[in-house]
Image (cartoon, rainbow, N blue to C red):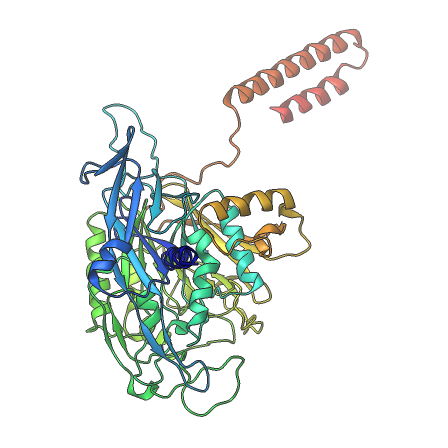
Length: 573
């Protein structure tokens, strides 16, 4: 009996340290830095235990800035010790009550080599788990050789683009489609992740839902209104969002509680209640730095993520940081030709939902954010918030204009609140819109001057993209990579319907639009073209000789056929 108790205690201790909700994020230099975040049921909080628990082993090539302390043949492997934290949150007692998170562990791998494959293991991983990730392409353009052109390995570079995801069956379809796309190297998520809405256990289920993809691809997020989640007792905002994610922070976060948000409630569905909503679609307080706003290099692009729900006036910290960031980028734009902006609230929206909201109008029209985007030649601005899809033409100050950013509203990820179906009369700047479908987007940066935008729409009538056999094979791969929620009962084992491309467009880089044109998707073989031309000339010569012979034989009416045939030959030329 004593041995049995010891064994049970040992198994319990192991279970406490098994990693869950594993997620990757790019560092400010996405080609050489990756952060890894995971949760466990570890109940300890002392610093010494963190040195033991927040540990990752990473194996793969190094730039020389980091020294491996363990090795496996010719592949360097090194041990990284990170940090630990835990957060508490108070929801309305009659709704979800108080919550304390599991222990959150975080490590940062640095000195990595661009565009390279890595294996990693976390403290507590079962021996059978095999985790992997790949760094982003180099941020630097290749040096040209003394003579001739050089291939730029940064292209093509594909990014998955989503917003307002949630945890529905449609949400899972979106995740599976991103996973099934072999081109996608990075995910940009324009706010509204879990729809926890102060029920913090939903953050845990969300972390498990996205883990199959987030544990192998860098998943970058920005704050939406559903991340505000004001604490019932303190009025603190963005508590879970700041604790659970590890975006490349410029400084430690600065926050101040919102007194007016104290006592807020957010029941779902929308049961009427007195008092304020905990996730309002409006500015509620001060939240700067940390995960609030940041920037990072992603191959040939600089991605800037902003917060629609903090101070944005010209003397605010966010505005001044953005201005300095854009001015610094201007000095190295030849190396980083593409600029992508991500934030939750759309500047351009022809849907009846969230129409002309205050914080978006202030940012765009009164605080000068649109002017900054236009001046510094942003190519695209990615938004969510409106539960529909809409793409604009290049637009500035409510008018279509070449060289202006294209605005992409992708609030159609699959959230539980449903579709925003009602549109206003379509403005001239609106190019495409759909308020009846869930879906996802993909940006493929083809070269320094052209990117391809594609929007994929849910369609249950389509044939299978992933059939039953391949679904089972992929689910087993993910389970072996540590995704604990990929069970036989989960949707991962079921076939996946294809999503057709419903909207597709070439987007010119406002910074380099005069450079090479879009690549040919199916270029013709040069030798075949030459053979074709030679064959056509030969046929024409044979025809001409035949006509001459016929004309000589039929001298009684020499002109009609000869003139007609000559005309045919002229048109052929």
